[in-house]
Each structure stands twice: as structure tokens, then as C-alpha cells.
Amino acid sequence: MAAVAAGLAARESAEGLSITLYEEDEKVGRSILRSGNGRCNFSNATIDAAIYRNTKFVEKVFEALETQAADLPGFSRDDCPRDSFGEEGDAASSRAVPANAAPANVAFPNAASPNAAPANAVLRLFENLGLTWRKDAEGRLYPRTNKASTVLDVLRAPLDELGVAVRTNTRIARIECPHTPSSPYTLVLGDGAFERAEAVIVALGSSARAGMFPPDLSFAPIEALLGPIATDAKPVKALDNIRARAKVSLLRRGELVCTEEGEVQFRAYGVSGIVIFNLSRLARQNDTLEIDFLPFCPEEEIAFFAKQRLTGLRAIYPQGLDVAAFLRGLVLPLVAQSILKTADMAGNEAANEETAQRILHAAKHFSLTVKGMGAKQQCQIHRGGLDPQGFSADMLESIRHRGLFGAGEALDVDAPCGGYNLHWAWTSGALAGINAVHRLLEGDPSVKAVR
Ligand SMILES: Cc1cc2nc3c(=O)[nH]c(=O)nc-3n(C[C@H](O)[C@H](O)[C@H](O)COP(=O)(O)OP(=O)(O)OC[C@H]3O[C@@H](n4cnc5c(N)ncnc54)[C@H](O)[C@@H]3O)c2cc1C
Image: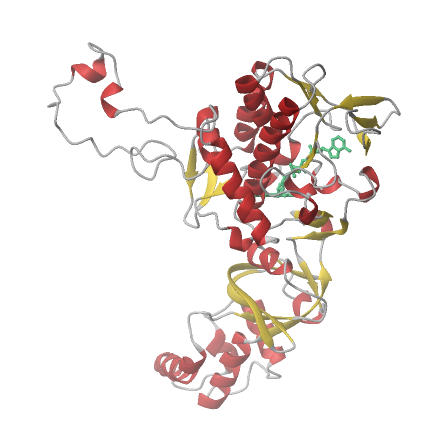
């Protein structure tokens, strides 16, 4: 995205800029392919800076891109009047439609209503790049092809057209500052060779490491997040591979930190699933995860729910009912066994109003102690990296180092699941790309390169 935006800005503004994209992998954009289970949840219909870490900074970056991209071809959308569809005499216009007829209620791909423009500069650019997408019930945006490769295709295809050189299998080991204000940056490559560039955009994702940058750039330690949580193993061991819909509350010293509702996947070491991933951004060791297997039944309704359920079951089993039978049909059998264990009850204990309420209470407060992150290789983001406070939010340029820009996960910004992290990567990449070019246009016109 940074390279595409730089290419668009350079095409608009100047001759003779050379833009190079360095990629240590043999192909660019592999991280896009693995996103969203191979479908790439590339953005969200509702983007709110408040859900991001370093909110104020992110908010300004979002605003800056909207302002700066407004008139940049590629990011803007000229509305196409409906009567311009179909040339005179072709099949579309030869249909007998009265000139003043209301537009047919056709929803074109991407648009909430037929003529609505996408909500932000990133989506407008994706639309202009040719991407069509769909929105799921939670507002997550996916390519209509349901394949992450489509997102990568539309970004990679114009690089050639925009004059961006792509150097794959090329690792950047270190970025060294200019020795004098007018000299370029030095990119030290993995094989010891070096290259020079007037402006550098750091978009290394979670591979960014403190030693790669000028030492005066503040860099927070990298921490894998948005992944499974390891808990005390005893209560979950028997539930390995079970999935259950639940509300999960994260508690710290008894105080509620955050609640998420959705599918929880149990693992031998803890819990996983999108709701858990989201809580992992906030969880700390020794916090409590309280799993409510009955989110539809509010606490104050437990007595009524117990009574109603007992009445129904007694109509079928008038001879007697135990607590295991009381839980049957309410939760999965293995979940029922675990609930009984935490309630310190045997399955054959008689179900009456007291035991039924006790068991429902246990089902709403299934507690696990957080030990840390579970399988780190499954984590979707890494917190830490370059401190955004060292970068201007309106350009994404280092405050200390003119010509050095940051974007994406290399900066210490993260958000929950839902397309927000990629939306940050696109937005910050685009803003850095545009401004790296603008910075060069202010400098010596003889040698200009963005890396
Ligand atoms: C399994 C998984 C699924 C995910 N799904 C989603 C999702 O559906 N929606 C969402 O919003 N987010 C998702 N994310 C998060 C999202 O992928 C990241 O937030 C996003 O890719 C960050 O973009 P980036 O450009 O900053 O870094 P990256 O995408 O990591 O790109 C950095 C690039 O730099 C290259 N590179 C690194 N170091 C060097 C070096 N030294 N020299 C040269 N090249 C280098 C890398 O090979 C890579 O191509 C997912 C993450 C994972 C792990």
C-alpha cells in the first residue's frame, strides 16, 4: 500500500522519482494471503479510532489521509451519473425507461446504496484498484471472491504501471541515518551490500527490531497478542477441542475490564477463538476469565429460569430428576461435567430449586486464571515497535529524522479482530507513501529515491 500510494503521488507530482519496494521473502504480500483464514478481512464498515491502541495518534492519521488524499487521483471517486451507464443504442439504453424514472434499486458491489461512495480514502482506493467486497453481519469486509489473493492481486498489479521496482529476497538489516542533512539514508542489506535513499518508509510489520533503526528512535519491546490465552489447565483439559457460545468477562482483582460474546474454543492449555483473541489484547497474568455459558439468562432471572426448566423436565421425568439431566440440552455433555465439577456436585444429585440455581450460577461463572498467551505462533498482531510519539501524525515522518517514515505494525498500534489491523496498515502505509514523495519534492531535485 505504501508503494502504491507513493507511486500515485509521484505520478501526480513529479518526474524522475525512483521508488523501490524491498521484501525479504521471495514474494511480496504473503502476510495478506494468510489473513482472515485465507479470506482477508481487509477492513471494517465501521472504523473508529477509539478501538486502537494510541487512539489519539491513530485518529489524527485517519484524518490526515482523508484530507491529503481528497484530491489525489486513485483515492478520489468521481460519481458516475446513473444516466451515463450504457452508450446510446446499446442493450441497456434501448430499454424503454422514462427519462424521469426513479433509479432502479440496484446495489452495486461495495455500496450501501446505489450511488454511495465508500466511507474512507482506503476503501475508495481499493474500489479504484478494482476490488469488490462484501460485508458480513459484524461489519467485517472481505473480497467478494472470498480469497485473500484478490486483495494482494489488486495491490501488486499496478506496481509496474506506477514505476515501483520490486526487489524480493532482499532483507534490510539496518537503516543508517544521513551523515549530513543533505545526504541520503543508507540501507544495509542482509548480504552486507548497501543502497542509498532520500526517503525511507519502514513497513516491516512485526519483524521490526530496535537495532535496525537509529538508536535515538524509541522502540517498545515486541509482544505477541490477539491470540489464544493460556489458563490454569485443570478446568479446561477435559474440554479440549470443544466449542461453545458464551459471554466472556475479563476481570482484574474482581473488577470488570472487558466483555466479549461469541464462540469460545477450548484447548488443553486454555482458550481460543475471536472473543478470546480480542480479550488477549487486554489480559494480564493472574487476571480472571469468567465464562458465562448462559448469556441469554440474566443473573436476576436464574431463579425463574431454574423453576421454569424444572417444571418442564418434571412433566417428562415425574419419577425424579438429577442435576446432570437438568443440564442436558442446555450445554454440551463435557461442558456439563466441567460445570458440575466446579460446582462441587455429583451428576446424580437430585435437581431441585436450590441445586438447579446453584448449577446455573456455576454455568454463568466458569472461572479460569490467565497464565499468559497460549500458542504464540497463532497470534495475529505484535504490540510494541516504534513509538508513534516519535512520528508526526499528519505525515508519519520521524520527528527526529527527516525523510524516515513509519507505517503498519512496525509502529506501536494495534486493534481487535475485525479488519481493523489491516485497515491501519493500509491507512498508515498510504499516508507515509504520499508524504515520502512530498518530502522529496521539497529537497534536491537531482537525486530522489523512496525505499
Ligand atoms: C494469521 C493471521 C491472520 C490475520 N488476519 C487478519 C485479518 O483478517 N484482518 C486484519 O485486519 N488483520 C489480520 N491480521 C493482522 C495483519 O495481518 C497485520 O496487522 C498486517 O499484516 C500488518 O501489516 P504490515 O504491513 O505492517 O506488516 P506485514 O504484513 O507483516 O508486512 C511486512 C512485510 O515486510 C517484510 N519484511 C519484514 N522484515 C523485513 C526486512 N528486514 N527486510 C525486508 N523485508 C522485510 C515481510 O516479509 C512482510 O512482507 C492477521 C495476522 C495473522 C498473523
